[in-house]
Image 1 (cartoon, rainbow, N blue to C red):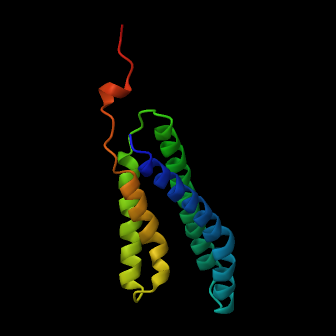
Image 2 (cartoon, rainbow, N blue to C red):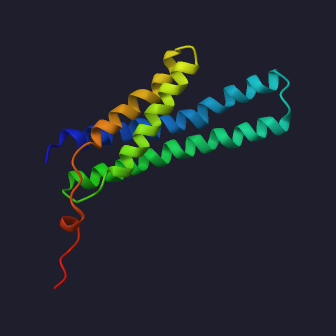
Length: 137
């Protein structure tokens, strides 16, 4: 097994965990201040806050699952990466959508690049289920 893809997966996992912290802990206060300055109704701010922090929690979850999965792979354990590929594709496609609809603002590459890299890292062929399960006696 090549170690390059699992190491790349670990690196992307770290980026996602850090990104989730930046998203929720650093991104929300600035957005909140702008919303208050724009005299946005408090119920709308609350709804946006809930969705914003949900996004941060999901980024954190994706990062932690990536770290666990690729650490297991480096230990030689059979772990399917198919779900990570699906999440990575969704992450990258969301970033592409945001990039296109956001006037090609390069900020949205923060979703595209990790999504594509995670997709590549998770591209290693999955171990067959029969190889991952212990044989019955």
